[in-house]
Amino acid sequence: MKPRPALTILASLALLPSAHADVKLPAIFGDNMVLQQGIVAPIWGKADPGENVTISVSGQTVSTTADASGKWKLKLQPLKSGGPAVEVTVKGKNSITLHNVLIGEVWVGSGQSNMQYNLGGVLDAKNEIASANYPTLRLFTVKPTAWSDPLDDVDGKWVECTPQTVHGFSATLYFFGRDLQRGIQQPVGLIHSSWGATIIQSWTRWDILMTDPDTKKEVEARIKQLDDPDWLLKNYIEETAKRKAAADKAIAAGQKPTMSLQADWLGAGYRNRPASLYNAMIHPLLGFPIRGVVWYQGEFNAGNASQYERLFPKMIEDWRAQWGQGEFPFLFVQLPNNGPTVQTAPDPANLGSAKWAALREAQLKTLKVPNTGMAVTIDTSNGDLHPKNKQPVGDRLARLALSMVYGKDIPCFGPMYESMTVQGGTVALKFQHTDGGLVSTAPGGTLPGFAIAGADQKFVWGDAKIDGDTVTVSSPQVPRPVAVRYGWDNNPLISLSNKSNLPASPFRTDDWK
Image (cartoon, rainbow, N blue to C red; front, top):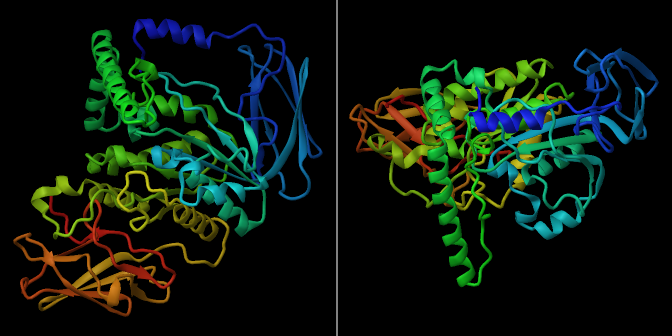
C-alpha cells in the first residue's frame, strides 16, 4: 500500500535514518516498564552499523552487533517474577540504564472508543481514581497515530499506576489489570493502544485485508479516495465546517465543545485508512514480550457483520503470527446493549434494526479460534454508546484471564447456547457454562427476551421457562416451532444468567438471511 506522492515525501522525511552514534531504544523499552516473565524476551534498538551492543539484567549478559542499517536485536532468557525492581543496562558506545523495571505479566489492550474511554469518565470515577494506588501495576499509553506504511516506534512512556497517572488511562484495561493483579499477586504491565471511532480494517495488516475478495475491493476503493487530493480537500472542508457549527452551537448553549475543530481527513493520517493503525500502533510493538491481548471493538463495523466474522479471526491469527510468541490468549468484549430498549419481537425482514445483534453473533463465532475468550456485556449499558459502567467489563475480562491463563478455579463464562430439540410445540434449548444452574434476572423469575418462530419466519414472544440446564420456549401462536432467538436486537430484553451472575450471550438458532 503506497501513499500518494506528497505523502511519500513526508513519510520519507519522517523515516530517514538520522546520524546517530548512540545506542537507542524504542519508547516501549523504558523506566518503570514490566518485562514478561517466563518467556524469551526480545529487546531491540538502533546503533551505528557494526557497533557492539550488550544488555545486562538480573545476572544475564547478552551481546550482539548492529547490522549494516544500524539495527540490532537481543533475546533475554526467561526471567522470573518476584523480588525488587531491577535495572536493565544497554551498552554500546554509550550506556542506557532503565530504572525501576519489574518482571511480571504484560497485556496489550486495543480497540476503539470503549477501550479508549478513560477512567475519569466512569461511574464513581472520583473514588476509583483516589484508590488507584498500585505501584506494581504499570501503564503505557500509545499516542493515537495512523500511517500508510509500517512504523518502527510509538509515542508513549511507562508510568506507575497512581491517582495522578491513571485518570486518562483506559478504564476497561485498568479494571482488567487491577482485578488480574489482585488474583495473581504479581506485577502487571498494561500497554494501551486504541483509538475511538475506528474500524477493524484499520487494525488489520494490509496483506490480510487483500486475502478477502470483498474486503479487497472495498479497501482499494477507500485508498483511492484517501489518495485523491480533491476528495480529501472537499471532505476536509465539509468536516471542519460541521465541527465548527457544532462547536458554535455548544458554546451558544453554554456548553464545552465535544470535539476538536481539526478534521482528521489527511490521507495517511486518517484513522480509518485501512491498515493504518496496525502500521502505526501495533507494528512498533511486535515482538515486545507479552502474555496476551484484550480487545474491545466492533461498534464501527456493525453495518457488515458477515465481513467482521471473516476479518476478526484473521486479524487475531495474524497478530499472533507477526508477534512471534505463539498462540497467546486473545480476550475480547462482546458489544453491550445500545440505544432504546426494544420491546418488539425480532423481524428477520428488518435486520437493519438489529445491526449490533448481528455483530455480537460474529464475535460469538470467533470463539472457534483457539485460545480466545469473550466477555459478555449485554447487561452493562443503559443504552449509551459509551457505557460508564466499565467495572464489570474489566472484571469479566480478568475472570477469563485468571481461569484460562492462570489456572484459577473461578467461573468466567455466562450461559452459551449449545443445541436445541423440538418436542411438539415446545423448543428445548441446552446451554453450556451454566455454573450451578440457570437463573432469571427479571422480576418475578420470568424470562423475557426469548422469541419463537415457525417456518414462516415470523417471530413472537415465547413463554420461556428454566428446566435445569435447559430453557423451554413455546407459544400457542407457533404450533410447529423451528427457531428461537434470545436478546436479538441492539438493546434487547434480556433475563438469563447463571448463578455466578454472568449473563447469557444473545443468540439465534436459525441462519435466516
